[in-house]
Amino acid sequence: MGSPASSAARRTVGAIVFVLGLLYTSLVLWVTLRPLPWATEGSEARWGILNPAAWTDEAAWTDGRSLEILLNVLMFVPIGVATGLLLRGVLALAPPLLLTLGIELAQIPLDRISHPRDLVANGLGAVLGVALAAMIRRHPAWPSQISRQSNVSVQDAMSTP
Image (tube, rainbow, N blue to C red; front, side, top):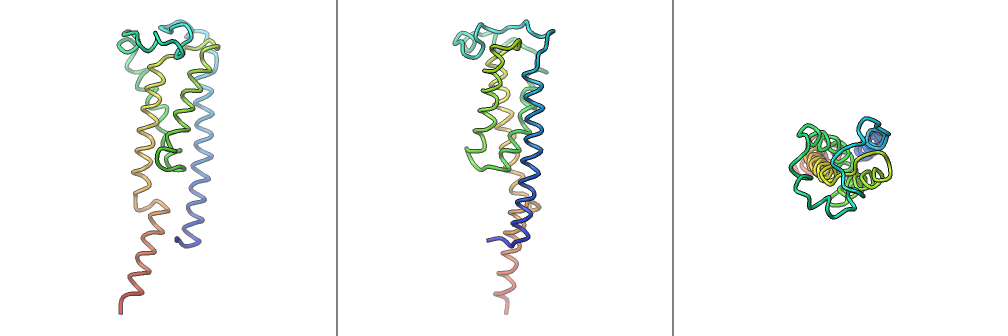
């Protein structure tokens, strides 16, 4: 078990990650759900991601601007990082994947484009973010690593004659 100082550091870092993640998620919701009068026409199938034809149409996967796809991936990396730092394993993927699904579903009745490619790109960004969070968690400066290192140091010091 870690020292009280390392437990406090973990709680503090967790609170900061939670607040920043919440703020960033609010920004993503604003960007993806606000009305865009100039961008309501596109390659959207009726009922968006709920339409099986939207998933099987070759143009859904071959058309589209590379920059838009890249931005969709990058937009969800920070959300994946935040959830990956707060939750472990597969549980860390659930919130960002549910968020992107919710966004794409919410866009259907709005004047926005609900597209399978966006859902996949956002999901990829979430997976990359969770993987990045796993690497951050292993860094020696991460609070849980500090407590492990201090425990090893104390044990080493006690066993030295």
